[in-house]
Image 1: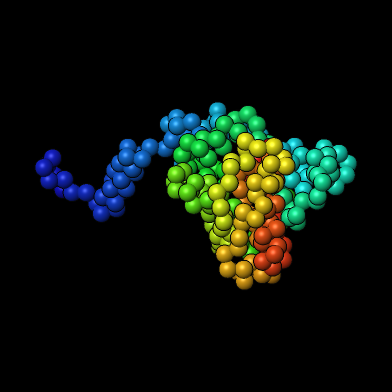
Image 2 (image 1 turned 90 degrees about the vertical axis):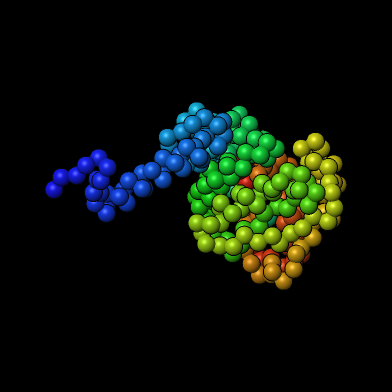
Length: 253
């Protein structure tokens, strides 16, 4: 059978392939695959950083400290910093994906303060992988550390909640906002250790205390430095009856 340029017969399966290709190319034009860390155009998996940015992703050396999630720098159960704490860490286990240094620190700052929310996917993936290796079974629920409502409104998102959703989805466990901030607090990064503790006294309250009772909860935040924020959140969930509380962060400062 012959056909003219104006009347070309295209097999049905060929038409489907053509439409699929056109749609794929159109999507790439409208939403190009960019590195979520630096913005360079990629041909790799959507949402995964470029090779140069991936070079900055260096996990903690092993073994790991269960108190803070960082490198265990001695032959004891906890690292030197955890052993020097005036009080023991209030959670049962902490896991961190990487040190808060170099390229990872820069990427976290972009994610947290500059609206680079696409980084939630690669950050969440590495946090989940770290938990599966050093933490164990999935928890009953993943709980993001909340921001004050005004700070979240100004920023446009809670970075801990974005991470929590990326972590929880493959496990099929819920993300539950079981905590709220009672009042505005100064940014922790600008305070020394004792000022951080004072800044957070009574800052968290449970949302529906019965929701925490008897459960294993995984608290998620971006960075642990002194651990004061996570400690205040943990103590609030303990008072609400949580049976086990673990902590998961992108980085340990």
